[in-house]
Length: 424
Image (cartoon, rainbow, N blue to C red; front, side, top):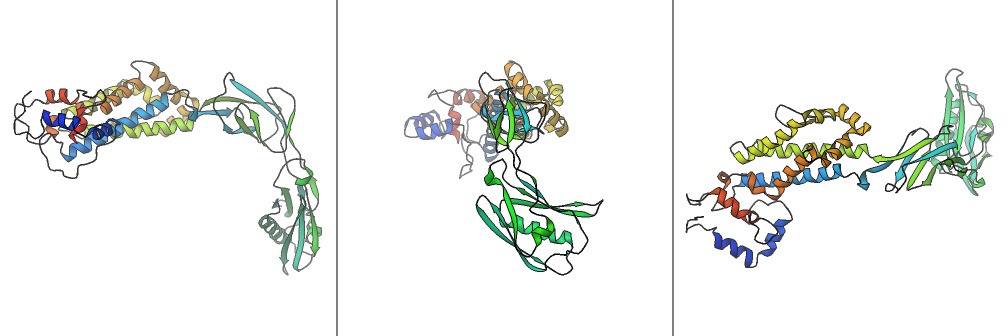
């Protein structure tokens, strides 16, 4: 290998860089960090122009991202992607799960009764008729769990029954008394009713409440203290076991699963473990973005045959799997970039086919996941192979051979990286 004696970046300089105090620089490059643009962009012997530096940065970042996403997609045991799923979310929904339980494939949960709070239902009153109770400031109290909350409502001349009921409901909801109030209107009969319900569930007496007038007659007139239902506990069975009770509808039922009971049902809901389709969908979207970043960087470098070869290799992989990719919602447009068919990908994610595509192709030596991951890894590890000698500055002798220089920069002097790292 012949290098002009005037060349400032010769073999001796490489050895000096390696062995005379700059080991930290080499080590920092081995962790695959991006190359920062140099402060002085003047081209010189053995340097890349600024466009070349940006190209190296872009393809390394994109290839690293592709590898990372593919690892996540193909890792069937990734705990961040394992969730518990209910066969009937209307009866039992899953709020939280830990890791997949060992030796457990499913659980059955039957809900005989959901937990409820006390409910009061007042009298049905003509919604548009004038309220006949006390005018002016009225005060009533809600007592719950040994705590009394006083509430004031002003009644004006000409207020209708519905207006007074709504004013009472608004005041109760603002009070923090532990009671939720609504006004239910029946348009067919033109009647309205004040309904109160405890915000806490269960049969514990401390969760019950009473409503009494202090001044005026709002409670008496509206029937706000008429109890329609006492608080009750949830009653449920897990795996056909004995009845269990809970004052709350959010219950830890075992095997890392916390469930929310939504309604009673004679048919048990089945809980199984699987991959989170939302997480899979998000990961695939990241893969598409990273693939397009890498392809765009290579395809747009039209005067660089090595970059063009990278783009061609990417097209070869996607072309081979075009039909399979299309079935899970990934298309290839006329420019060679990936596109997403949202409706098709949603269906594939919900059915598990989206997840299955990447895990199965990881297990196949020439599967899509393996082929793309190998190419991305090659770009990340041996970036020099994907940029041509024309990207380097002037100053190299006419006898300089890029192929021999490529051999040099990939020689691993330290057993831990490429001398290409020292070009920047």
